Image 1: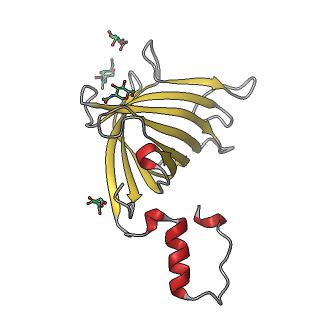
Image 2: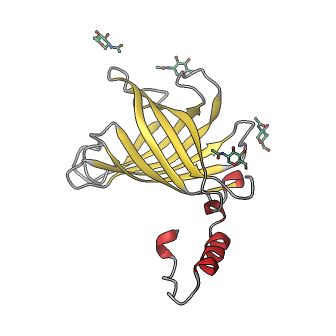
Image 3: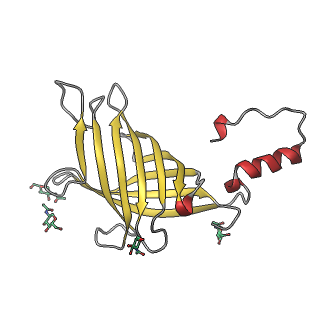
Length: 183
Ligand SMILES: *[C@@H]1O[C@H](CO)[C@@H](O)[C@H](O)[C@H]1NC(C)=O
Ligand SMILES: *[C@@H]1O[C@H](CO)[C@@H](O)[C@H](O)[C@H]1NC(C)=O
Ligand SMILES: *[C@@H]1O[C@H](CO)[C@@H](O)[C@H](O)[C@H]1NC(C)=O
Ligand SMILES: *[C@@H]1O[C@H](CO)[C@@H](O)[C@H](O)[C@H]1NC(C)=O
């Protein structure tokens, strides 16, 4: 990650810096970006729930608005917004209400691809989701397989929400720095 790189000495020439940077950051070379859009099919309650509270503060209600509540997630990921559109993989991991006032949830998710194009590869998504906002931006911190060394960000937006069944469709738009070696 860029933040952890040691500060380069000012004596090193710009072109040398560029070379070092390219060697450390193969994704930075082209400077181009690629965008992938998927949809998460999220069910909170009922026999087919894909999200379950697994831990929380003793004596308090376990909910998205209660600090300390942790959820396990395994959402279906589809190519289009419709639940029956082509499956792409699963979004598996944890959500944790990380704000004392319950306003923010921390996201720790792996997109586990099973579609033909990215089968066996994963993307790791992490960050704070401000629950009151419809546009929530988190980091793409890395990946595996075709997404090794991936860097970028992911926007989560509620596409559809049915409060009766707590079924929601979340649009996931992933922007990655394009690999310079053609990945
Ligand atoms: C749960 O999933 C099964 C299998 O897909 C389906 O038949 C059933 O109707 C679903 N139940 C609910 C409450 O959505
Ligand atoms: C994905 O890979 C697994 C394991 O190699 C294989 O069983 C499966 O058929 C593959 N799926 C697709 C869509 O290629
Ligand atoms: C939710 O339930 C109410 C009352 O039963 C109903 O009027 C409404 O249409 C339902 N909403 C959806 C999106 O199904
Ligand atoms: C990313 O790189 C690939 C391979 O070089 C190329 O085909 C694709 O068009 C690039 N995408 C963008 C958005 O630049």
